[in-house]
Image 1: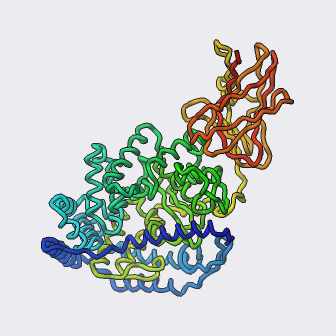
Image 2: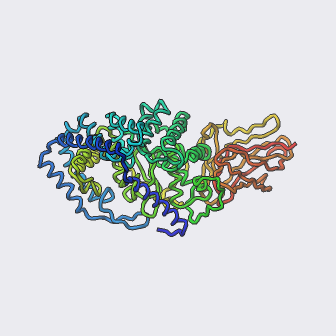
Amino acid sequence: MKKHGLIKNVWITMILALSTSILAAAKPAPVSLSPEGKKLEEHYRKMLADLKDTITGLEPKVDEKKKAEFTKQFGTLGNVPPVNKIVMGKEVAVKYGPDNPAFVEKQKGVVTAARVVMKDIETFLTGDEALASMAKLALLTDATPERLAGFAQKGEDEKALIDQLLGNEKLVVQAMTMGGASGGNYGQAMRNYTAIQKASKRSHEGFFQAWALAVSLQNTGDTYVYPDVPAAESLVKYYLNYLKAYDEGILDPAFSKLGGTGWNYRFVFPDSYTLEDIDWIRKVLRNYRPDHTRLEYRWRYCRIVRSDIPYTSNVDRSGMPAELSNIQKFFLEGGICGPRAFVGQISGYAFGIPSRRAPSPGHGAMAHWTPDGWTTVLGPHFYFCSHINGMPPMDFLLASQAQEDPKGFKEALMCEWLGKALAEDAPGDFGSSGGFWRLLGFYKRQAIVEDQKIEDIGATGEELAESNVSSEQEEVEEIEIPEEFKKITVAGDGTITIPVAACRSPKNGEKIRFMESIDGGMQVHYGLAGRRPELLSYTIEIPKAGKYEFSGHVCSVTMNQEFLLRINRRTLVDVDIPYTKADWMDTEPVELELKEGRNRISFTQRAPNKGLSIKKFKLKPVN
């Protein structure tokens, strides 16, 4: 891997520190219980013990030969020899998972053996009463009686939240099907969920309810993003912000159709970005690069990294304005893997696309949802990541795939929960070891993927992980511009308005992209791509010779820019570009001397340039 000095080391340290904090969150601190708390703990402990007795009595009989065949098949996986792969320029040994063809082939035999067993236990797997009991056992095991008591002892309101959860079988099943509460913090999850449901009537039904519950389960710290604001209060603000954006048609059209069990909704809220940054990124994509909001889903929104956050090491941000957020600063000069992954993530979060960090050793990348499945972006495949959301990365991918079949996924969970009741070992090494029932649940997930013909869509932009150059040839899509958007107009005071599309030969190239504006009309983006400047040339009929004030209506996300005007092939004029922070704004007017009749004005930017979007130019007569 390339060496980039101190700045890269700082970012890697930050990424690893964040990764460590995520994993550490799964190890809660010991709970100090009051006398009342100890009584509550005993109550929850008895509830758990009774459920275990009930559930172990439900264990279905399995034909010993079929069980032995399944055990024999997964036992062979440990003997599969590793294969070597080149990942981001480094050789890596792959023993388990889809990048080892021999392992994949042997796992097919395990899935076949698992299907034979599952056929014998269909009656058990389809029992609603057993499902509710097992989900409750899974919750109590995950939460632990001690932690539940620690929350409930805080007061009547807190105890009521736990009682409300444990007394609602449907809610327990839904919560556990969605993966349960992060860190086992079900009290905080219920506090979050109750606050959202109080703030929004719509959060009680349909996908709005699944979304409210999922984000409540995912974000169970005492605070969320804002360190001085209680988590439930912050989550209400995010929910209402996103609800307003949904109503205004700002969120992605797929937001209401994420499908499956509702599990994907856990990841629609950002893991660390403020609402101010969320609102700003929405403005960036809608004003500055609306074309990125219409791309196919692998690159939708997060393409802003490829177009506007160049891979650049040793960036000194100390002199940048203190009032800018880190996200805004990343647009000024770019950065290495960390900043690019952060911008990619927030670009999806802002529009309701489920996203996660996807770190690998020494590298920061991201993963996000698409209608065809989850993909890693700007880094290696899931297999080579350190973890996703605190889970082994391939387990995360398998969960994302299997939950697309809610009925089958619940059957897989029932096997896993039965294994927990029997104190079995969890599956390890992607289904190569573990207890019988828990492994059967793992291979039920694999069977779902086979039956639903769900494909792993792989990584996106891996070659751009530490580079600005892609091995893939980017297709430049031409756009047909209606004549109405090319019409130059003259106002009563003589001001001439020149739409940006009124240029000679309005074609898309490496640097110049014409696109539809979010609010109607056309705009052009003059981008960072390509080494050679490109021209936008306009022919304007001037009714009377004299001086005119020229201005452009522009949108920028970087500082210290200017563009160059060439007037009638001889006069050169520099025009300063304001730092608009993704708003639309006029440039300060510059004075041009124009002749009567036909005048030619050409616009360009010197390379290397930064991105700029333009809607129109104006020429106003100077009295």
